[in-house]
Image: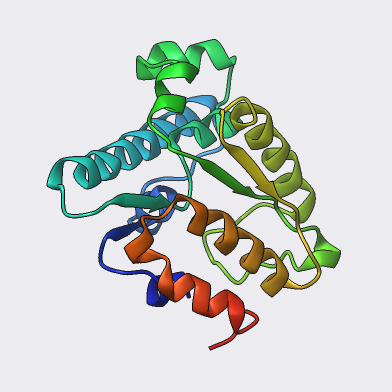
Length: 184
C-alpha cells in the first residue's frame, strides 16, 4: 500500500524473517535453532540496510522490522545477543533515524493468520510485541502506534509519522493519501 505513495528516493526493505523462513530456513524451536534463525535474520537485515546506505540512490530506507527485534525472539539472555552478533544497543540505535512501532493487534482488534509465515497466537504475538517495545523504547525518536479495531486509523497514524521523516520531495503522495482519509 505505502509503496505506491512514496517516491523513488525511498527504499522499502522486505521483512528479513519472511526472506529467511519463506526461503526454507528451518524453523526449529530449540535454543540453537532459534539463535541460528535470529542470527540469519539480523545479518540479512543489516546487509539490506547497508545496501540502502552504500548504493546512495535512496534518501532513506523504510524497514518492516529492525535489527533489534531479534532480541524479542532470542532464546537466552539479552547479553548473549550482543556478544554473539558483536553489536550493542547503542550501535543499533544509531543506525535508525526514527523507530515507528506498530503495536500488535489483539484477537479482537484484527490479529489473524493471513500471513502463512505467522505462527504465533495473538497472545504470543502480544508478548513478543511487549519485548520489542522494551528494546526500542529507549531510542531517541521512538514512536508507537497503538493497535486499533480500524486498521486504516493505525495505518494513517503510521503514515503521518513516516512523513515527518521524509525529504520534502517524497511527502506529496503521503500527504494526498492522508487528506483523502486513507483511501485512493
